[in-house]
Structure formats: C-alpha cells, structure tokens
Length: 325
Image (cartoon, rainbow, N blue to C red; front, top):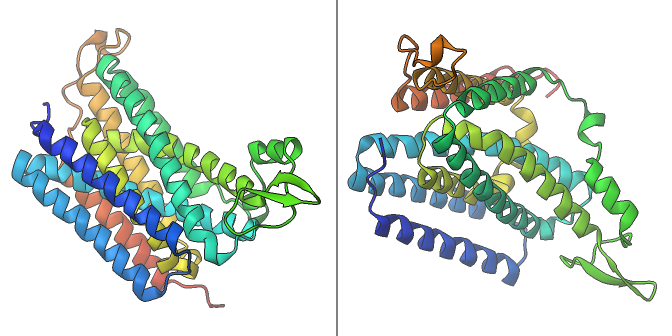
C-alpha cells in the first residue's frame, strides 16, 4: 500500500526540519560550550516532543498505520543511535577532544550521518521497488548483526583500535600534535598542517557509514516509505548530540543495553524474512510463488517489541549493577 501523504506536507516537513538543523548548528558555532544537565535535558525533551507532534500530524494526514510506522521507525533508529553514542564516547576519549568543542564534533558527525543515510535510503528504496528478494538479504544481514551485537565481546583494547582509514590518514597527512580550538587547519613549525580534529571527523564519518549499513535495512523492515524512513532518521539523530551530554557516564552503566538492541535487530530481521516469503518471486523457493503461511507482523506488534526490549534492557542494567559500583 502506498502512502497517501500530501506532497505539500512532505516538502514542508523537510524544509522545517532543515531549518531546525541549521539553527542548531549556528547556535553551536556562535557559542561553543559544555551544556549543563538542565540544558541537555531541555533539548532532548524538545526533540522528543517534536517527534511526537510530527507523529500526530502524520496521524491526521494519513491515519494511524502510517503514524505507527513513523513512531516504530523513530524508536528503532533512536535505540540504534544509542549505539553511536557508545562509539562517540570512545572516540572523544581516544582522541582527547576538548569538552568545549565536543558539540561541534557531534554536529559534524550528525550531518555526515544524515548525508550517508540519505544515500542509503535512496539506494534501499530502489532495491526494494525492483528486487523483492532483497528482503531475504536484509533479514539475514540483520540477524547476523544482532548476533555480533550480542556476542562479539569486544575488549577495551579492540575498542581503542583505530580504523584502517584513520591509520592511512595519519600516514598520508601532516597533522599537528595538538588541537587548535575547533579548527581543522593550523600553523605548526611555520607550515600549514591539519589538526587532530580532521582525524576525529574521519573516524566519526567512518563510524557513521558502518551504522548506516546496519540501521537502514532495520527501518525498511518497519516501513517501505522513503519519506518515513528519512524523517525517522532525522528525528533520531537530532536529539543525539544532547543525549550524549545528558547520559554521559551513564552509558557504560547500561551493560545490558546491547542485548536489547540485538533483540530488536533480530526481531526486525525475522520480520523482513517473513515479508520476503509473502512476496517471494525466487524460482528455487516454493516454485517462485508467495508463501502465505508465513506470519505477517503488524506495525503495532513491532512498536510494542521495540519499546519492551529497550525497557527490559535498561531496567535490567539498573537493577543488576556490578557489585564494584
């Protein structure tokens, strides 16, 4: 079923969201600082409220099913974005980014993520439209990712290991030994060189690319609308910067959160696989005919599973703390 959203609503929404992102960026550039808990909380509440208002408008214009798809997609991307936060915390620590400029680094990371996810969304929409069997691949990939998420057991040494692209950049580029504010170019020993900030941006860009590969198939398991997929990603990423400062040291205390995220990925992977069976066209599976006995999982069931998974993982992390804490 195609979405019945008015084109004016879609265009108007994208314009308003772009203006909000630009305003957010200008605020950071004009006054770089470390947000207080009160400020970070206010911004997170603002962006969450904005997402819920948007869901209400979508309900008004297109009905409950599409509003439900947006909320489920937004919550999925928001929960997966928390994974980004763990990596951002590691990167900020590993590269010793001054706290005063961490907002700018995060904003650049968010803009890079939006661009990369936009490209992946366009590619994913085209694949889905022309090759229904791609759901089998998406589903299998998400189940595989879920397994790695739950059982990878990455050590601190692995977490601090630089990606190959960062090591290559260090060898090929002249980089100053210190930061110069938020600048990416500076004068060192009479020569114009890069600052360590460029390495941070490269690392974050590479991280965003990896997360885009994981998250876009996940949300296409909830909705086939590129508009809902993109807006859900925008809303999830818009509150990410403030959430970073709000959660701060709490992230490492949520030790079971990755299990909740893994369960969500596995669930959506199974849902995609079942959908692929319903629209099956592969001649070596059921003679190229759809498999009607496969269960169809509704948007509302998906929404309930996503919320419950995150709640259980968070509550379990808070209840079963390490005795050393």
